[in-house]
Image (cartoon, rainbow, N blue to C red; front, side, top):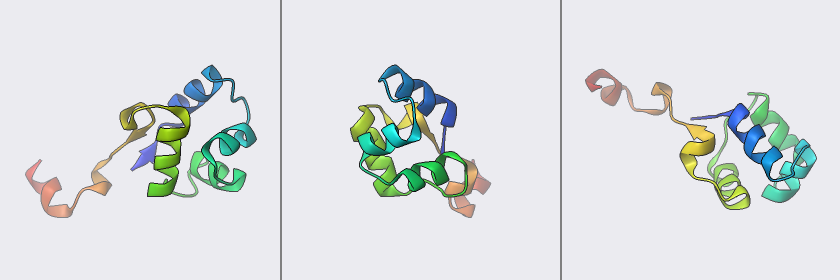
Length: 79
């Protein structure tokens, strides 16, 4: 699972959220969590994902993407 940083930035800016602080406040998470996720230092966990979907009123696919590392090895072999 990874966050599409460019998409989140565009959506956040469109909603008047121009700083990581503003994004964190809207999502109800810490600014350090937003920073770690956006900088790729931390994967977005379920609470962050839920907060993003609810706080920004967006669909999962608008901001997040699933990559092969998220699927079990057996599924990757079949796909």
